[in-house]
Image (cartoon, rainbow, N blue to C red; front, side, top):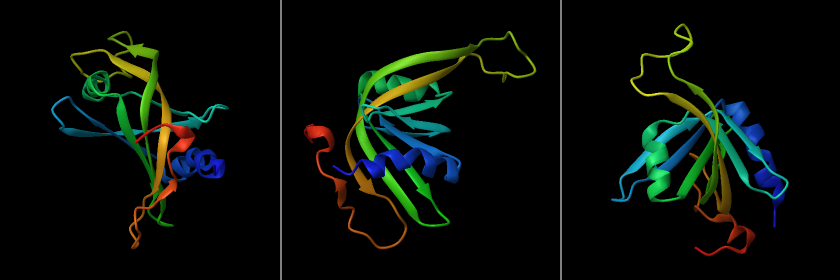
Length: 143
């Protein structure tokens, strides 16, 4: 197993300035969200932290499978990490208590941390590529 790819993902996301989180609802409709912070646990799970919108969270409740895309367009280096949500933690809530900081959203904004078990890592780049898996059946889980 090539752990270097996974451990390098947070630095690549920091360099790019963002990562994309792709979820799908129970009817198969995709939704793309932007995430700001990524980390890797000692157990080689991906940790994704941001103020995710309600659609992202509803999709994950209906279907825990997701994809995280990290791509630096300047160097054309990137990865698509495919996995399954294992755990969600609420880290912070904005609900009208700090008006200068908060938006005019009718619902509370919640900063969440997603713990993701990675099953597969694919190359993601603009240049011609095969979409070949970097790591087949990452950590032994099925398709």
